[in-house]
Length: 200
Image (cartoon, rainbow, N blue to C red; front, side, top):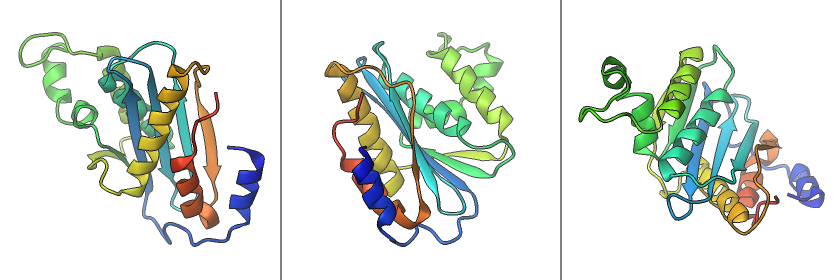
């Protein structure tokens, strides 16, 4: 995003997206073009005071969609301060189940599935659990994708464009963070959703 766009957004006194949120909220999404293919990820975190930030990135190595979704959830959870109450939302049933439903079974079976095969992406799954263990007050929830949920729509667009940018020959973006003021959050998010392409 160029400086003139940021300046314009900062000058627009729009209402905050929420008056008094009880906890931190995070949305995340991963995108793998051609699955496996060039991948991007994005996170949108909203603080209780109404301010927010986005994080997005991409890589040069081709990844599966499940890997991209896991990495996005890891980034979302690790963005939340320790000992903070929060909800992290993903539209990936795979990533959400890996964080919640399957942990007990996979651990009991020595990181093998019910069918006896090794758990795919085990290293990323273990890292996901480690981040959750550091933050016992974080709850992971599934949300329906492409259903008009602001946070989900935002990260979907950012993740997809991050992947498209690196596929088009751009340099991989390890992490880019954009702070969003409370007073301009709605307008800021709308610009981020439709800005194209993401600079590399």
